[in-house]
Image (cartoon, rainbow, N blue to C red; front, side, top):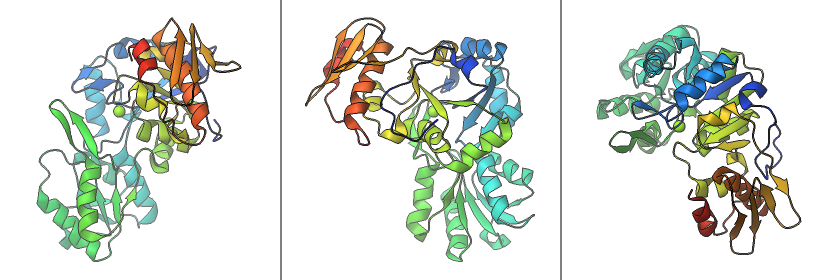
Length: 342
Ligand SMILES: [Mg+2]
């Protein structure tokens, strides 16, 4: 819970689903990938929920409405109501509503999720720069968003209309590979106008504030797969986080994480919510977790022992993060990670 520099993953004697009242779960790479549920997600979430943990789903994707996201989760076997889905469209709509008069017209460059969120805040979505908008908002519009929409944004922004973006994720993963995300679309407009938008999505505070306001969480645990959105968002919100390795982050990236990207806990997948977390113990010359001991030499991270791969990774995190301090660990971890097959 503190902003001091984290130098190792924390232990927990209690299952995380009992130690925290609410899980703020990222979706892609955590709960599902492409169209399908990630291994162990459905059962782990059902068990956490049955034990009394409140589950909320927090997504930077502004295209789909909370209803649509909840419907998808329910189809996957994770019963979810729209009230338990928080989107960056909602966060940016609140941000706009706080800065604009009630009923203000907002030029939408994006999809249905943005329009629904704006109406919920009493704002009026419009389609053209000629509609006299008080603000421009840009969110992921899916593959059918046309180039002309960016032109529309530019016309309004050039007249001095304030510009907002739901999020700035540069990429969006899909079944066929990596596609340009809203951040890439924002760059198009930024290059053309020289302006800068106000941004709501993870890792920025408006998104975290939206999740706390909507869930009422008192002791939230952010659960995510991405260091620069989920984990940094938790860091900025000063709440604890669990990184799962089912998405975009691999072990080497975790070892090289700067302070704002270091999660409180790390586990393989969502089963990690249901268990305690092992302590990482400092030794004279290294760190121990489970059967593993990790040390940092001048050139590389070393690992001795055996046991659970995740324990070895936790010990290596402690060695890497301690040696890096407020910086980034540049020691060679290839051989150590090779022993863990991570
Ligand atoms: Mg993700």
